[in-house]
Image 1: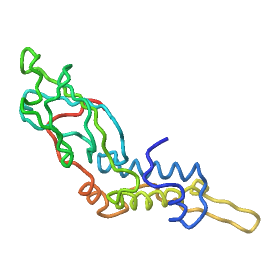
Image 2 (image 1 turned 30 degrees about the horizontal axis):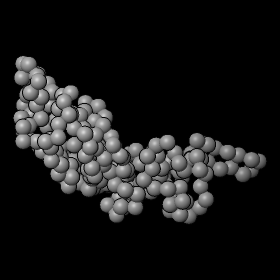
Image 3 (image 1 turned 180 degrees about the vertical axis):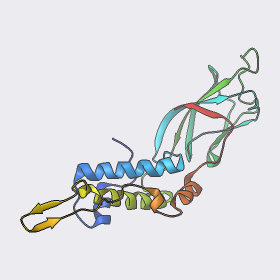
Image 4 (image 1 turned 180 degrees about the horizontal axis):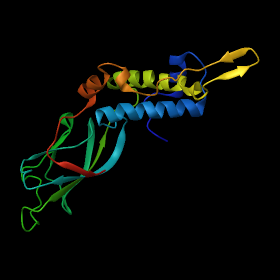
Length: 199
């Protein structure tokens, strides 16, 4: 099952009608995916995700930014294959500090790429007020996607009675002026030096 920022009951309430479970679930998953893609963030709460960051010879700083916000907890940290405990987490900014930097001292030659592997928890808990805006956009997108379901029928005719369905919009943020920029301002993260290899 995909991520869902709103429930079936909330979509039904928004549409003021009963909804088909499978169709509504798909509409919510699509809308949630569109919103999370726009922010480059997985907004739902995720516990103990392990990611690997690539650190090259130009990454000589003492801070390293974690890709997902907000960071709620940091577990194990490895520089190369070595577990390190001399780190300090700045949860409010989603970053880690290490006075020795993030390059592995085991590398030879020293300018080889290094990796930092972090296990951490991130995202917003269900019901967090910070999700209000994202949830409102998901409801609008899911509502329009759900309403588009009959659009696969172009024309239906019984005797003299005919119905023609128009093609409805799918979950598209470009139909909501300013929504993408506002979502990125609210939930996004600026550029970072270390490159995410895998997560």
